[in-house]
Image 1: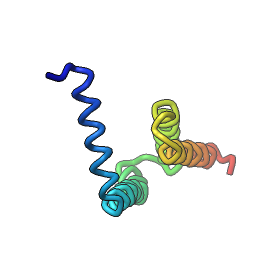
Image 2: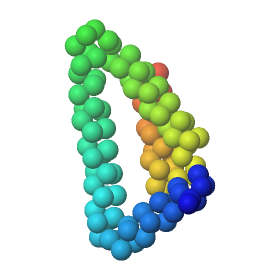
Image 3: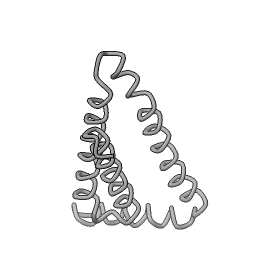
Amino acid sequence: MTDSFRAPKLARKQRVKWWSQHIPLAYVTVIGLFVLIYLSVAFIELRLPRWLISVGVSPSGVNLLLGTVWCGLGIWGVRARKDLGAGWLLISVLCLMGGLLTLAKAFAFI
């Protein structure tokens, strides 16, 4: 009989073994996940300013709102994802830098 500590450890070991036997599928899954995230963020990034302007938000207000969201997402990602690896940390840092640039554009520094 397994206890509450050994059961998750055994399940994790079996998942790692399965993925190590299916390396091409693992690569396709990871690349597909990044492409899906990128396309969804790009779609929102393209459409959201038009939607906000259509409801009456000024262009600098759109930049302020988007910059704040990207900075918040980047800060949250850097703090929460340090132990998940360099890929997630890089994505979070890029979100933070994009947010800072958008905020600089909102305050007319750029």
